[in-house]
Image (cartoon, rainbow, N blue to C red; front, side, top):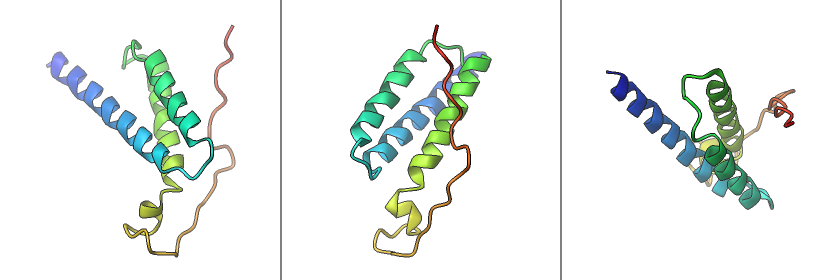
Length: 104
């Protein structure tokens, strides 16, 4: 039972990782590949965290928030599934991302 839950959790993280990378690849920025590499590096650095720990849950929350922000600029999502639809808008948050923890 525990192994099935752990497997499902790791599968969900892999799906999140892939969605982040795909969304980043279509992000309209000159720095999109820098962001792409930063995502890969963050996942590598946190790969050994216990998924049930508070640190891991916080990092997963930040990753979902980042995915939401990347997808705000995805033409297919904005156009309702049609990249040719010119009617879209973006709503920005006041405090979109938490500050990263200070490293000692």
